[in-house]
Length: 350
Image (tube, rainbow, N blue to C red; front, side):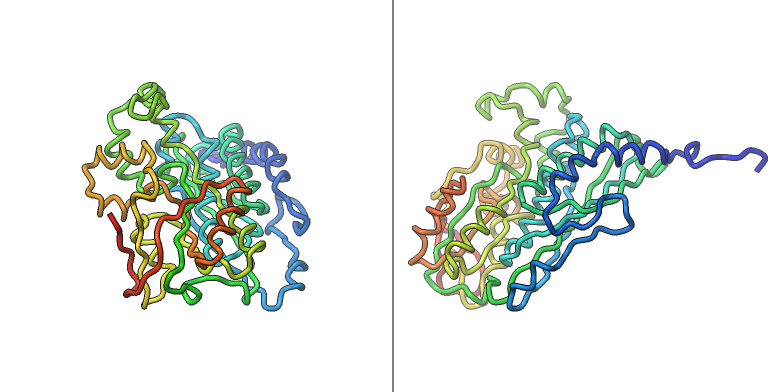
């Protein structure tokens, strides 16, 4: 070629990338735990394992996820400070189901055109999620994809690593007949079902229309309700597990697949979960989505969380203590059913 073409002319701005790293440093530092070694900008994130020495048999647990098509709504509304919370929540709530404490988090941001202010807003949300979960944001990657993604388009993924002492792990093996199902409320759809949600509630609407008060939501804007970040249950649940050893036998994070396809993952093959759907009120925004899609109750329960984002399977003798502990931590727990003999499936009491 007669003319030199620089990397910047090809669409990748290294200087803007360096500026973006500087713009997020304070947010990243705000998540650090004592175990963090070094700083962002290295080739790898360093985290001391010294805290494991007091465990009988430390087990590392990892989880990875993304935010999915909820990002398209954030891009439409130009609001990027909450989807990072969603990203962290989807990962840390998953590993919490084993009783694990999330230790650190790493993110990956793929973006059409890198702008430091935009990245700082997204990473600020990721840092907020990490603070809520008590884990450290120790690294990540920002990848500019000119010619592959539109300039304003971006995607997020991330992963977390946690630890639990093997004698304190929880799961289906500990569940017993008669265990009580204690639900923790969701903030809305969380980060699941948005391909359907966007189809029935967003398509054809402008950003201004989504920002307008919605009568069906009591005056709350539809866009605001749909972008409500996924709730992070780590601190209140870990608090209950530590304060009341043996009281909680298993946990189910209610994500894609709804209650039907997630609560069964916390059950042994010989027991069913009998859920009382009259025990709680489904959030207005979820009701609106179900009605707009014309979903049957059966289909809705295997698509959305229906207002319950986490379910604890609790020793019946300890239910009052567990719910009291959760309330002290700021939760509003509700008994949503019980464990009965069966074949490892979720059933509903209408």
